[in-house]
Length: 132
Length: 153
Image (cartoon, helix red, strand yellow):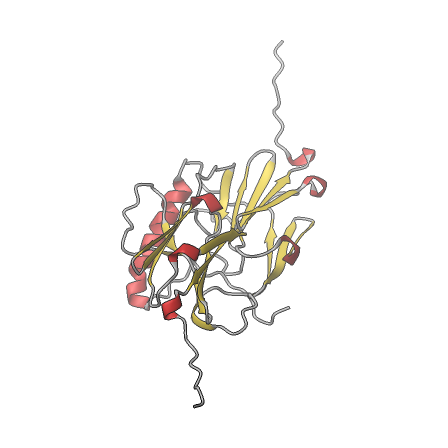
């Protein structure tokens, strides 16, 4: 067991309204972004969003992630609520060149994983020194 | 005026009252965060995972947001009227990478909840889909409300 205790990170609502036409709150998903030699990987928590409701859009260097929560059926009478259902929205500006053709997205247990492979030009190149 | 503590206390039976209250609370939090420097105190218990609890005549519904937690890393137990959720959210193994952002949290958790009613532990159903755990806790026959018909002459 890890020695850190998980606490609730209260969902943050998007401050500038994303001009949503649905009457649901829009949250900022928590993300991890890491870079390896060949790719940039983005991991986002979007609980309650099924795979088919995720929209990923890359327009020049602007990456937009949108997750739409399905209509929530209220069952019974609520006794207490520690979270709210809602959509997710977040935008990033990418710094390195991305190979758009090979972007991979997967969704598992409410976590989106986006692998953005770097374009050949942006990869670090090893230069071998030739001996004369 | 009498103030009742949970579980005797119930939300008033107005449709959408809880949602309206939630919305008002979030707006208030946002307003107050200007003065407190962004740290608003949530109305929740602060213990992971966040829950939604509801009930009707026959069933208690418990939902929890647990993104990225596999079914085998989660333990659900019911002893008497206490429901306990415990487990661990594991960090992804990522060798040889540089992190630009690390906002997702991991670690172990344990949360206990006193249910408003006894439940039939034999018939509990659990489902985990898209990072949301849904528990259906049926109430045993003796706690269900019984309708009493008045016999006419």
